[in-house]
Amino acid sequence: MARTDGVASVMHVRVPAGLAEPAYREVLEVLAEISPVVQALPPGAAVVELRGALRYFGVPAARLCERARVRSLARLSVDLRIGLAPTWALAATASARTPEHGGLITVEPDQVGDFLAPLPVDALHGIGPVQANALTDYGIHSVGMLAALPPATIQRVLGGRAGRMAADRARGIDPRPVTPRSLPMSAAVRHRFERQEMDGATVRARLLDLVVRLAATLRSREQVARGLTLQLDFAAGARWTKTLRLPESSAHDEDLRAAAYRLMDRAGLQRGRLAGLLVRAEDLVAAGASAEQITFDHSREMRLRAEQAVDRANQRFGHGSVGPAALLHKAA
Image (cartoon, rainbow, N blue to C red; front, side, top):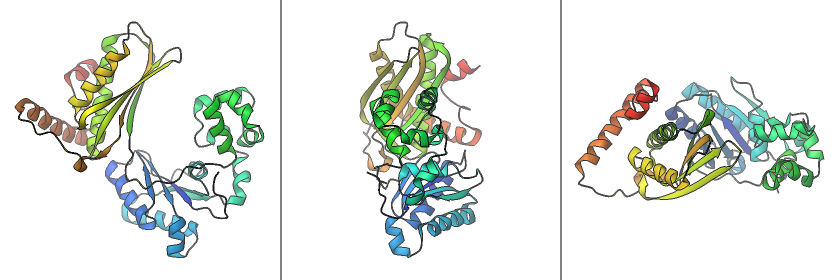
C-alpha cells in the first residue's frame, strides 16, 4: 500500500530533453546534496526520497524541491521539472504536467483524488499508448473513471498484472521504494521497423547498430554488462525473449555483438516477420569494479584502441558518424 501518512515526500525530477550525459550526472549530484536517497532514471529523470531530508533540514518538502531547482539553474543553467507527491507514480505524473521550461507541482495526500480524476488515462504514469487505447475503446477516458471501476474489470481489459497496476495507480497507490542508485542496473536500445521485416541481412545490420549504440552508452557511463537480452517483436504481436550470461563483464562492441548474434541464432528465424528489436544490457556494474581478463591478443588490443577512437569521433561529430563498415555501407 502507498504511504498516505500526511506528507508528500517523493520528488520526481525531469531534466530538459536531450541533456548531455555529463550534465545529467551533475544534476544527480545536485539532488544528492538535498537527499542521499536518489535513484537515477536515465536518460532524463530521477526520483528522490525526501523523508530523511525533511527531518535534517527542518523545512517543508516543497522548499527542498525549489532549492534543487535554484541550485541546478544557478550552477548548471538547467531548469528542472519536479513533481512532489506521496508516491513515485504520483510524483512522476505530476512532473509530466509541469511547464516545459521547468516548474513544480505538489500533490499532498488529501489532494490525490482531485489531482488524478480529471486527467486523461494516458497521463497516468505507467500507462502506455497501447493500454490507453484499450481503455478509451471501452469508454474509459479519464483517470477518475478508471479509479471508479472494480480492479477485476480493469484486469479483464488490460490483463492481470497490467490491470492491477493501472487500478492501483489510478487510486494513487504505488508501493515501490526509492532505491539509491547513481545509474541503472540495465540499459536498453530499441528499433521499430517501418514495415514488417523479413530480410535477414537487414535485421542483422539493424541488430549490429543497436549493439554498437548500447556498447557506446555503457562506456560513456563507465559501466559494464554481465548479461545481454534480445527481444524480438513479431508482426502478429508475439514476442521472443532470451537472456545470455556473458563469459566476462564487458562494454566492448565485439563482445556484445557476439552475444547478440548467438541469441539471434537461438531464435531460429526462418521467415518470421519482425516488427521490432530490443537489446538490453543486464546486471550492470561500474567498470572499475569489474575484473578484466588479461590477454596477449594483439589484434584485440588494436580493435579496442580503434573502439576508443570511434567513441571520441562520435562524441564530437554525433552518433553514427563513425561505425562498422556494414552500417556505413547500409546507410549509403
